[in-house]
Image (cartoon, rainbow, N blue to C red; front, side, top):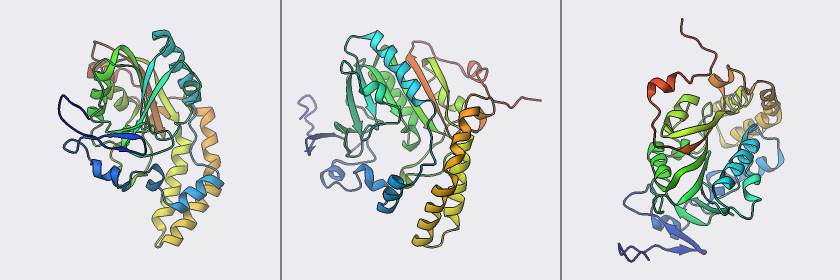
Length: 291
């Protein structure tokens, strides 16, 4: 219960469900009935089985070193930093550097039940006080939000002055979450989203090789006319295209990759200054030049 406003929230399997039915795409009843709110339900049983047994088409080249840098910076801010994880029902790629630190308290949230979900809340309406967290992680989430700018505004609100954010978002990727898949960001597009943050680092996390593998996989899937054909194409793609992602090691930091990456990251600190659009376009690092 929240006495000041008189609202009541359910607790399901010891997980508080802090959803406002009037503001969220989801309702508290969705979680009471567990209707499409388990992380594994977003992917079919066949896909989950293939994922466990066949090589992946994805490769995040930068996450581990980025999380090491984020961890070092967050520990400099506080002896016991408090970090919010948005979309934290499962462990994000490369997060071990952060989760291995016993002095860092993680609050892991999502709109799905999962092995790491501590509480359910909507990223557009975070149920926390202003200036509350030392850091926020929002990895592979922004593309699935109806209003990414609203989420970033909430991140700004709940971060302490100078607090850190680490974000990753897709660019050259197809629709992977069905009806809950909305937006893609270029490198500059992601930077503009966090324009009220001072940049610590940014760039590609998955390169053109990964993007090509995904595109070929979805091309094969588009040819399928039945569930069984689709399953066959999915398996074929995983068996024959996985090697393309390894090409990204050699080209991940090249200018051309900034134009064709599978996804990008941004790390920054909350600032009282706003990056102007004129300043933004001067940050372009790609290979294309205006003639």
